[in-house]
Image (cartoon, rainbow, N blue to C red; front, side, top):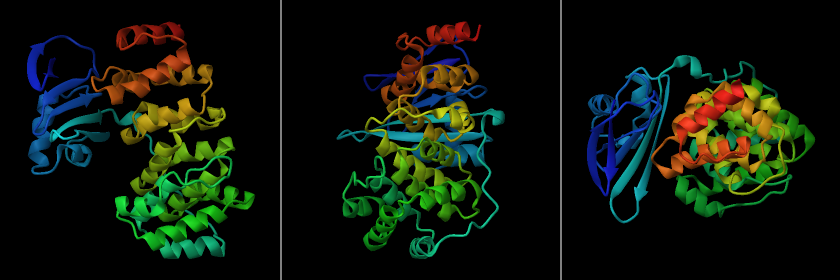
Length: 339
């Protein structure tokens, strides 16, 4: 297997033997491109194939082409700019094994909504930009509504309509009764409308003292509709910035195993950070790791620091060990725990 490393802005090629899933870094059009989780593909071959089927588009937008044209079960791509240099470090995550990808099948019902929910749904419609802007603004603690960002500033950044965003935020603030909590969980699990499910995910921000709200959010990360999962991820990105009371995650085992196995790679890092922020029980975390170690270890072995750090922090938290970036030592620990 050939691996290319970017050193001081230059690419140096050398050959070595490495296990499946080892990170591979090659030079890209605007900077290094790191591939994580590959099994049958070689980085250069995949890079060339993406360039062929996805010409003229930023390499950080290659995930759709990987899934729709190159046969990947799932994929994610993330570009990190080097401010002022015009250089971009791109991380591409590929999931080749379809058995590891388990999105939650959308509901088939039309859940009856009270008038206030119907009104806000009519106002927002399917405006995903406004829904995503709200997801950046509404995370709260213990039912207390707090804005992490100015709504007007968020609206400008997300390209959302400020007036529509204000109406949506006002609705979420008022949807704070126990009936709203039950309804939000019900809609997320059963409703066929992706916009209803996205609004329900926002409502869960009022009930983060309840473990079931956190379970609902990680369940939304593996929603079949990317509009819903993106709202959940925008929320989780904000929520992970602070500490929370411990959450019993045992009720969310299935969606967590799906995410840790490779379902929706965009949600992997945010989910790990949420598990750490909510003080996941180490024993339960160890069970998750033992059932699905490969995708986690692929991230732990990444060269890009922001990509590997959540994986390493999670391993350290649940194991009580610290093997640094030594992936083989982590694998040996996992295998020992299995025994």
